[in-house]
Figure (cartoon, rainbow, N blue to C red):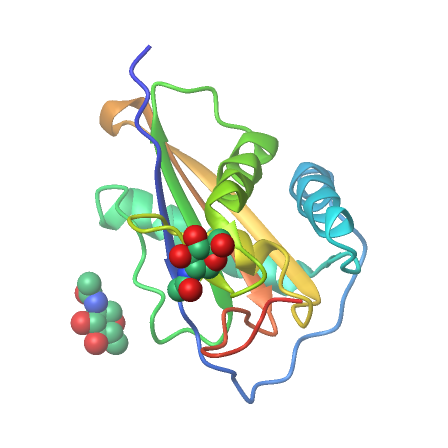
Length: 167
Ligand SMILES: *[C@@H]1O[C@H](CO)[C@@H](O)[C@H](O)[C@H]1NC(C)=O
Ligand SMILES: *[C@@H]1O[C@H](CO)[C@@H](O)[C@H](O)[C@H]1NC(C)=O
């Protein structure tokens, strides 16, 4: 099987924007929420709540990347939310496998000194478990290119604040 997982995270500074109000959880949210909240519970961090507006924002963005950007990673550097992305091909991608891929970076993260092993991207993991992030929205798009999938999650407030520990 052609396995090509790429992970990518963006450091996002604290934004001043207020979160939109939370609403009922749509069915597609469950897998993302459960996988995030299991990883958070494992380190004693409170669960994330789904946010409809964040879900819509990620849905618009993955479809834009699919339709206009050849299914490449989005540029999230100027966004007001924290963001995790994953692009995969030759895999059955589900919300669970997306989040599990990010959480797999936990192996390379050392909490005691808040550092990451060389050539790893622990930021995708630390965003998943970031204590001050309270709300989540995620979406994925299937792309024709290489039968790939692009998935994006947004977090509010953003995590991975420089110089801070995730929890
Ligand atoms: C992403 O956007 C930022 C801010 O708009 C810009 O400075 C940066 O060059 C962009 N990065 C890429 C890879 O396009
Ligand atoms: C952090 O701790 C780990 C485990 O003890 C060690 O391997 C790593 O070199 C340390 N990193 C830094 C930047 O001190």
